[in-house]
Image (cartoon, one colour):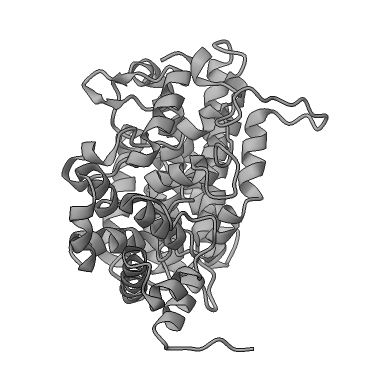
Length: 436
């Protein structure tokens, strides 16, 4: 792969259209702004990240997480650009491209966090949705039983929904390629791992790959190489979700102050421990102390991941690097990061409040899928007719094939906020009635 081809302002869906405006934004900055002002991005404010949406204590939701990932992504991209500025005239825009891709990386996630993804896949692989397998091809069945938020984000950004324009969000090819962390379809996902696009978006991805010179993986021609900036988007996400989960767990008293500071201090070089502790002692508020350590930790990880990218640039451009940057950083940082991962698994992700929201999400999403898939498979029944009227016209529930109809249902459900999904669940199960 070559930077000259990988960085292009050309837009998906409007390839021949380019407009000169007087506001001095480049095309990648337009991507960022277009995403920020979209309703899909705005709905992330009411989608669970890990912990239940806030009561008296504010923790991260999908929107605040995405904004923070975009900030870290821009810092990573700008560092890389400063070192590679001689390579290509567009190289200076790497920070803008990565930050836009970071904003978009979670747009395809359904409500109730990662449990929402699992609930969708489980409904078809283990629940009543199994009866639909005979109506779908193996590739289509793989898409829905392994439902993946990353692939759904790519669909949301590129698919032409009813009444919408060609090309979906009409983002630049470079931004779109930068969110495809797993550049292969569900049939190539090994051991139920993640994948990057559904069967319905295969041609869209191939078109983008061809335009940017992204070649098949030299070790597996059924897959493609990653766009290099994917490594930076992935690193920004890895840094933010792991470190911010630790801070949120402290605020919710899942972790003590000592546990939290010990975890974060392990990212600080030994030579700087005394200085860091003196800075912390300048403020008596424990929350501010944790915030300072979190900031220092993220700064160290940004520097380490940027350096790792530059060290492995040749391998990345040749498609030979497959490990995420966070696994290749210096040992003391990698060990500190892994300790955070282990703590999260042992103490955070199994906390009662986290399990409760996951259990509720499973029940709500499974029930919505049960009712809506029954409606699209039996559309002439009286109840089905009434229920299908509830679905916005942008979703293609009248698709001539069953795969298209199921995708329309998944488009609808995955776009819901937690509160909207709960409200619809209560109404269609008769647990609540509309109020005037």
